[in-house]
Amino acid sequence: MCGRFDQSQTARFYANLIGWTDAVFDSESAPTTNAAPGTYRPVMHVQDGEERVDDVFWSYRAKWAEGKVPITINARLDKLGNRYWSRLVKNGRGIVPAEGWYEWTGEKGHKQPWHIHRKDHGALFMVALANFGSFEENRAEAGFVIVTDDASGGMLDIHDRRPVVLTAEDARLWMDPGLSPQQAIELARHAAVGPDAFEWHKVSTAVNRAGADGPQITLPLDD
Image (tube, rainbow, N blue to C red; front, side):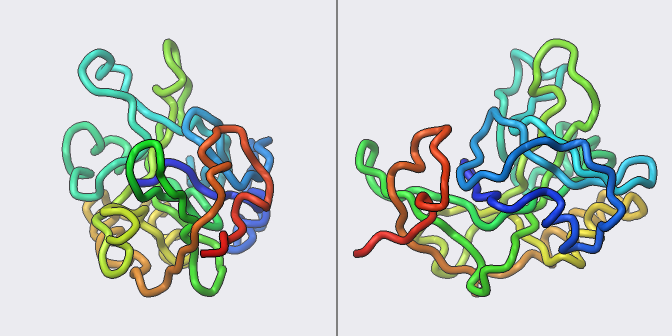
């Protein structure tokens, strides 16, 4: 899964990395090394032919699903074709850019956080789904989720699931409205950056506290 992520560059920085020099920005979120669910984070997407970066609430539940489905922060790749996610796969494909994400190992009360990032320290373009409309009753109506898939390779030692991460080129393609929902799902399934591109290190338990921030959170701990 992905329960926290490191988004320590500006939204404009990430947009420039994929060539969105003329994107429309409706984002005031400051960079953070410890983005948590229930906060607004910049999400890249294409709307009415316009490249946009908007602040979106991290957590989602369809309005009609209240009382039936819990609010969630992630969506499983193998479930994207079902009724719950199909509308967002068609009209709500986005990208959450980041420097890395966090996972935890160990027993409850003694969990060790890890910072996972690309070996080349390049930016991550995490596949996301969002309702980019307004909300009437609950902010999660207009929220986003990060798409996850089964982990593989050495990543299994950290967690059994991981965000689906694309290259900059494939991230642009994922957001292309001309791509059909089925083509988009196949892209996420087959073009995801593989586990060999990532590495990870232990970090301070300070990251456990929502609101904690700063570059010291991402520094590796000595074994």
